[in-house]
Amino acid sequence: MKIKKLVCASGRTGFYFDDQKAIKNGAKADGFAYQGTPTLTEFTQIRQAGEAISVMLILENDQIAHGDCAAVQYSGVGGRDPLFLAAKFIPLINEVIKPRLEGRELSNFRELALEIDTLVDPLTGKRLHTAIRYGVTQAILDAVAQTKGMLMAEVIATEYQTTLCRQMIPIFTQSGDERYLNVDKMIIKGAEVLPHGLFNSVEKLGKQGELLLEYLEWLKQRVLRLRATPDYQPVFHVDVYGMIGLIFANNLERIVEYLARLAEAVAPFRLRIEGPVDLGEQLAQVEYLAELTAVLDARKISVEIVADEWCNTLEDVELFAVRRAGHMIQIKTPDLGGINNSIQAVLACQAQQVGAYLGGTCNETDRSTQVCVHAAIATSPDQILAKPGMGMDEGYMIVYNEMQRVLALLEAKR
Image (cartoon, rainbow, N blue to C red; front, side, top):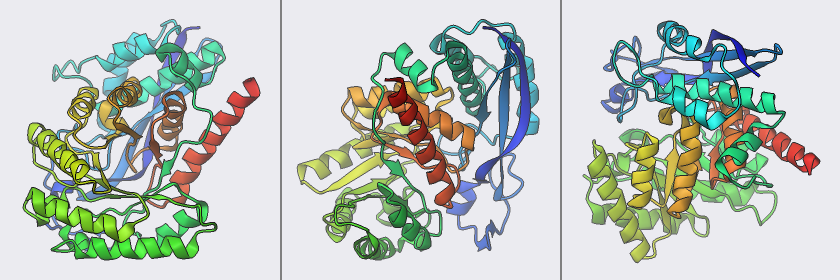
């Protein structure tokens, strides 16, 4: 089967692009928007609508395979590629990728994905934007699956020699700023990992972390009150965007002491803290998280550190995993470019016995999320993010339902 034609369509994502630098510098919320002037290149507002590009491959038999190009909410910071705008990048896809794919035989996902993932922008000499590589490789995976009469998960398992997961993978739900109301939804629906929390400012965390502590105490009581059965024991996972390091001036002892207080407050529930510090560059981040992880383990403090910032590529994930810079690593799927890289990143974490969190961003689409579910079924990460959006219900529904469909189809094929 060959690719007959490549067609692009601009689209919306499930959330927004946010100028994280401006927000960290104190931009004030104005309803759902932010006041002030953006600081990052190409941003016209501190918060602006998220954009996507659907890449559709029309096959010889007129079936259509597709994937969605999307970038993270906080684009342009932490070593990530700049703002992803559809009008800017559709012409580049048509110029660089379209002539390379049209007429190509579809026999192997892994090889063709690697080829596309290593293409360069003729103007910059750098690899194509991560969002382009992400979406085009999704479409290739779908196309190969349709050609072979297989599920996308089956194609991945076959080509990467993995064992297909036969049970639900824990889904991590994110609340956005509605960190109280959305928790109720998570508990009612039985989310296995919650609530993310979006603690991305000192105002939300507290100058000494007191507001996060109060929130976690409330969260524990809320779960105990609303859970349907006593055996519902969700993992508490909060993202703090480096704010703990900020309020404690990156003092290791003070941070460890604070994390111990948080763990004590939520016991017997498990606690994960994502992005406790942001050292501003990768080497310092790896060294600090490795030391923090080791100290927590040595003192038997029941907090798992999740690495996120400065861990953007497959090579970054491999580095953090080898150095054990965190108990778990978020594989932020759009940042890794081709979906093939996210697949390999899960396997790299597992090889080092480090937790693999197949994550991503609220700023993705339903299609990119569905493809990620297939990657998860084929590689068995420790958890997968409910995405897109911050409303909880929509993202959880997309991940949960796609996973149930895939598992049911795999069982039927047995």
